[in-house]
Image 1 (cartoon, one colour):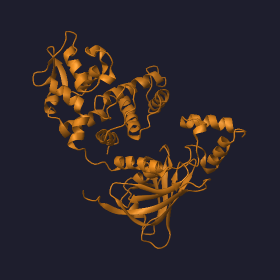
Image 2 (image 1 turned 30 degrees about the vertical axis):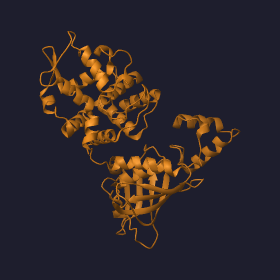
Image 3 (image 1 turned 90 degrees about the vertical axis):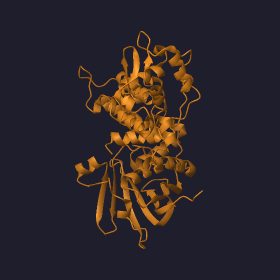
Image 4 (image 1 turned 180 degrees about the vertical axis):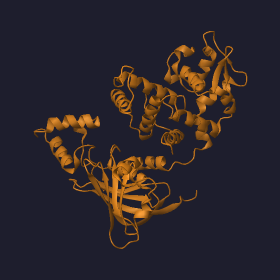
Length: 418
């Protein structure tokens, strides 16, 4: 095997100003990393949740003061330089003998200032980010800056503290974890590097391999193949015939998803949703008692990258704007491995839809049940593709495959207009 190509990099020591105990990380990042990409790295390195604005204050290689803010919309409102397109190499000279430092601030309300010091130049494998060392877990999101976080540590550690009960309840609400799990002095460099490796795949994804493409589109390709040039005969009620339903469950390995005989489409939801979704995607249609390929389906019948691109565009541009909002959220959760609990996700989606201007016919905020329904619709749509490692049992939480991650990143790029 050929050794992995290496690229010029920065050796950075980052510490959170004013934090007690001291919270710091030693990171290797490529010279060509952009400011938004560096922001994602620092979010991961310190366990932040990317909920707030961020900014960089520095003097660049040409001696010019720079104030760079992200996301770009916030920069425009504040009159500062937008972060997109700014490369770290514009700002830092790793060969400079005098100390080179800049500040990264996250959450302008809590004002978490990260002091970034350039320790020198480095080399690292292309397409990677690494943490060399560090100390202590990152602060809890929205804990009130360094002073508030120190108070949280003190109160949670002492059951007799006057704020112990109040801040324990807040911690459980804010994190979804029991206060007894809080370990302010914990730091696992191996676990962090695993998360950074996943992040690197998000930031710099390789093109999908042919095998990854075939795996992701497999359920769709299977039904297109079954329809063939002549179509599939349907039952009198317009469903797939039992033999086809049983074959779908068997061929696609879906027995774990639907217990029982799974030979009637009306009672086998995964197959029903697959057939209906291919109709919604305009790949199949009903005609004279048969399920036949549409003109688009005939064009996509050979599968491969054209079908992959077609499906990514279809997922990214659903029929209505409310579904588009929910799709964006679900794709983000899947890519980050951060899907909230069932109770939380309904509330979060309802608030997001209401905040985006959606209302019921009577003008009321979006109810949680309606939000949950949209979430289920989006998940059933995505489950018509093979994005995850095959589960062994119903309800098992499965990880995305590399192909599934690449597909969702392409959908996310389309949603973001990249």
